[in-house]
Length: 328
Image (tube, rainbow, N blue to C red; front, side, top):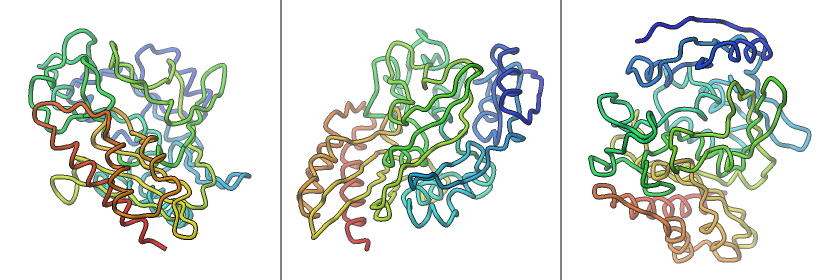
């Protein structure tokens, strides 16, 4: 591990000032992803700014009926929060399907949003990688790509976004609150992640020194009928091969609206807007769910070893929709 300095802070302005004074610095909270990457030599920040002392670890109701989740809320606390479990069950299920209890006790909301891909080539610095060093190449495209993305990829990168939590947040239209030295702003989650292009090292719209302070969930009464389904190689402590966060607004046996987001198959938490549109006005029946699944994967671009993910993701969407339609 490269040497680094350590600076604990207790105020947001203090954190931003410390970051500005140290080019290449990194904020650290739970560190469940960052420290691993530092040990591997993937990340080499000269300074870690410890933000655990900031007052950002609360879950609070919003005036419009939504919910504000502080950036430092631990994954375990969020998953077991009574309001989250009752009003946004897909979010609780997504979090509990990821990592291990020990990691969930450490990992934070903002850290989950910012976790890096687990692509083998990205995490092994003996290989070239456009995400680590733009222009160096992507060995995954011609190499072992069984776990890689089929949606949102480019000819420069096919890495998969690893988060479960963020898939549920995408389906819920979450909004990210960001603080900088001169301005505070909000960014919808669907606009937070940058599409892979010529520079896949650029992953989010965060500017230099900006800090995530909270995530806002809008009021969505019918999100109580929601579900997160994850398919993986083993039952625990494993990343998704395909996952789906779904919610249905049913009235008199007809779907008024739907939310569908995919994980494990895309370069970012993937909102399937076209699939949602196919369900509006239809009865919750197998044919409708099959059409939605087809629409969700319509733009897939599989590689040599991950073509199975296309059919797997379709079946995951169908199964999730069938299960959530049966919920009362």
